[in-house]
Length: 183
Picture 1 (tube, helix red, strand yellow):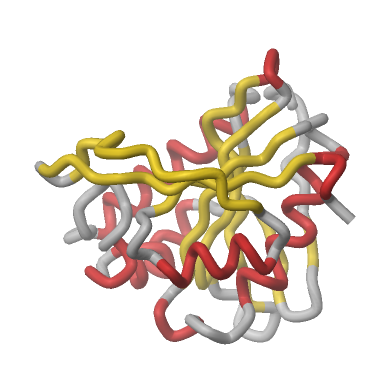
Picture 2 (cartoon, helix red, strand yellow):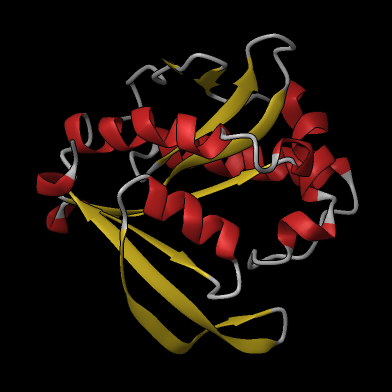
């Protein structure tokens, strides 16, 4: 992916995975302003819409620089962004990247991530030439763990007190899926 590459649009039955723009900031703010969404994030709950503009801009710059990609999950019916999913910490020399995601609480337990992870994982292996996709999550975040396991990720272990988030050291569980395991 270089800065001249067009942002890839992926679709599923219910969702369009597309690049987010500044006009999507109210939707992004709508979920990042909820404590239950940022509970396991390494940043504080958003308090102003400008923070949503900043994160969208950061994700788009990462794509332009060829350092990763973050899709907005747009509900096909409303066109509104209900969450995001994508790759960061892309280590091209090691053919691996970290996947991350979040969804508005109104859409929790409705199969959103199960649906969107499929084309995103496929994109990682086929278009980004990844051999390994890894995910880190708080061991208490059983919803993220379950989504990842359902998508074929395999638990590898817990990195004890490996992150310093919101003033405390916390554990990080790690799981991964390898290209040879992907079907």
